[in-house]
Image 1 (spheres, each protein chain N blue to C red):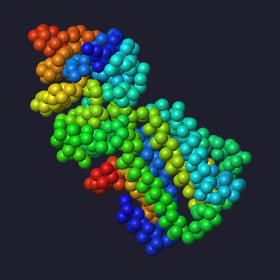
Image 2 (image 1 turned 60 degrees about the vertical axis):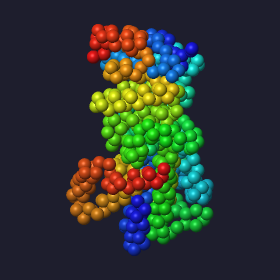
Image 3 (image 1 turned 30 degrees about the vertical axis):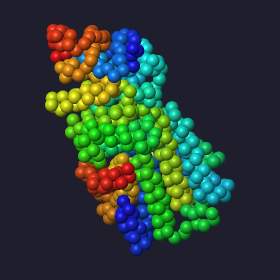
Image 4 (image 1 turned 180 degrees about the horizontal axis):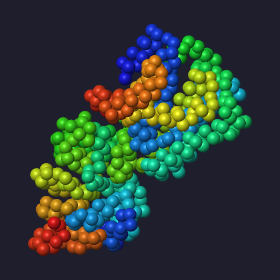
Length: 235
Length: 306
């Protein structure tokens, strides 16, 4: 089975720092993969480089097609959708408008309404807050909105950059559970997280990123049992 | 907004004299500032050079009507077309810049326009300026009555603001707001941010150009000073007083900034002091501008528009 996303030798710079050093990574269709690592390990740079938000070297194949030469918007059009770190929602716009922007590349109102109904079913809170400014939502609701906006694009691969950041543990768990539910429905997910235990409970496979390199590529059980390693890198 | 416009029109019809002149200038500036608002408020960019496009519009009207006897409306449209085209060409390299660099580049744009107006005497008559520009009107009809002039100018400003409102709640407008909010997130949802910045810049230039043309028609005279740096400062003041990013802000800001010096003119030497203090107080106690003081309204409008 060929991978949906296949990355070979991806290097990227963040300013003068070499944030990623020849990273290899693959995500199969319908898989839930998590990338763990401490602050500054290059997790955010990894997603930014995959999306083409920062320049990188190496090959990125998506759905068996090289995409490393494409601009971000063309990657998004192929179904590579990122939920940015610290949510990146558009604060002065309403919840409705934020979701509408998620479907920016979609043409046809009916399809957009169908997707919106799906998002509201997943996060009923967003429907209640439809006309509110996104900036006035609580942290958890903002994260729901960020994920909802990502889903509005009808992603083939959903990439999330630390969705639990700054959230109360219970809410973070709730949101990560939702990602598990989405994965069970068939969505391929690449989750970058610092909160290892939560992510490991959901993922099929885990990578550990350390100082811009892949330090481990393993299954969650093995990683969990390799307690020393986990403690060393993830706390 | 609608109520405010009605109130202003009612007062115009009832009164006359200097107040009408204030309203006329405010309406013209409201249009100019609406364009600025598109670029700065909606799209989150910065331009200190919008006066360049007002000058283009004003001088287009002046030259085309006095030398070629062109209809004022045709001259206004040609000026707008020219401004849009120049904004497109200039904007392409300029808009790659961000923040302070964009501010400096656009400031230079205004200064260049000023220099051209001064130096190209064959066309612009330099510091002397061009006078004898036909007044407001089209197809040979000139609007003489000053109250009618004010109503027409207000209607044009209303049209411009209405278009801006429609724009704000369209797919295009949401994309502009996304660029203003978070460029990276905007790119991630598939928005071509360069295109949208350029489009907003061109639109703002067209608004500025029409305002410049109307200014030339209303005053009947253009000179480099009419479209100097003072226009930029005035425009910024109106934008922030009225409320940046708010559709109605430009008109509210323009009315206040135009009317305030008159209402405090009795204070003579203290006039500037009171004027400045009033502006500072507004910025402290209504940082989102006076048009944003009723926050319930825009939300209701947004819901309806969607």
